[in-house]
Length: 113
Image (cartoon, rainbow, N blue to C red; front, top):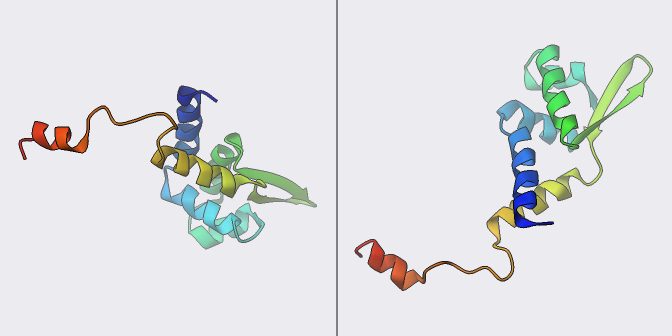
């Protein structure tokens, strides 16, 4: 995957986790499979808001739904945690073959230190 495509993929994943509510939902779903009502109760947000957050998380492939009778239960997609870890690691670790444009000593001199 090219660097730009990888950055776009990472940005989409991080944007999906850009609200506290979605982060909390992902945390809860990492431990258990839950329906909207239970997610609402545990997060303290309305059923409608939970549904909207789940829609965003599903659209990026982090969450999947499973109908059980009258209820739909949600869980993390298999491999979601690994995808998130890999995306963060890729952001924090430079690509092979890249190097800083200046050395540390050059950088210090340009700041006047």
